Length: 317
Image 1 (tube, rainbow, N blue to C red):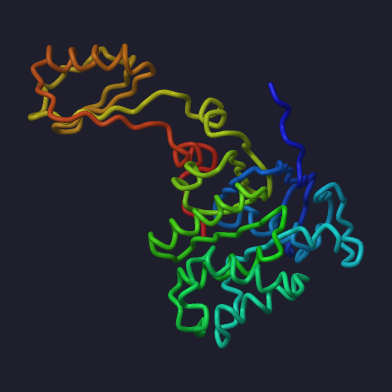
Image 2 (tube, helix red, strand yellow; image 1 turned 180 degrees about the horizontal axis):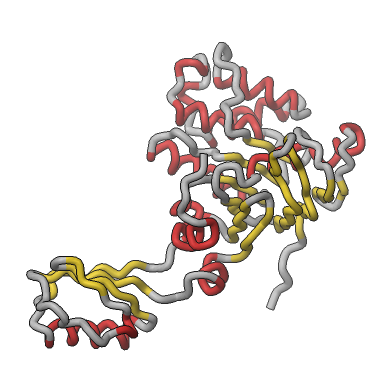
């Protein structure tokens, strides 16, 4: 069994308050080399503050941040060697609307220390990377939201960082642009970058991330692969919904507490742990009670179910 890759980012005991508001309360997190880590949490849980602390935009009151083997001190000069190898993609669009896509890339590349003639090569790569080559010399203000998002990402990774922080990179974009952005991020990871991603798109995070960390009230409350999180919270059982041609007679499902069967009109809902063994028995039970099954829907454990189990269903603003 091969050893786990070493962490490229290690956060320990991170604490930060804004007045009486607690943003971080001892958050601890590790990001491994070439890993795609999703950082999820309700609004106000501390996600953005944690990202900004790593980027050097927020000073922690306590705790430590180690980036690429160097402990960050909060001093710009001391931290510069490590942060040169860091890419930051903010949630807010941070491009110049009165410049073209090419000009934006040239400026951000120069700011990141990419020098000529390498800069031209990187700009050409970024235009292909974002699928904006045909719009390279158009002003960014005329771009769609998705095009601006893609350009925003490219401006943050022209210097080929080893660690990339992404704060809600797909917010407000259309499905086609969202898929293109996920493809771009896969290419970055495949090229060797480690990605730390915050998002509210739980279904997509479940599909793309190697590991998930959930933060709430400034603390990491869960951390692991999807399977590990499911095992530690909601379990591997499957929800089953049977659609019948008509409601069953009253009391027909009494005594089946094992599968927690509930009837709602012509629908029967329950849970099974072993589909191959329990589902046929459930269908037989329904038929024996006089039901005719028209459809069967099996609900697999989801990241959304894990998230709600850990953080609650109350809406937070």
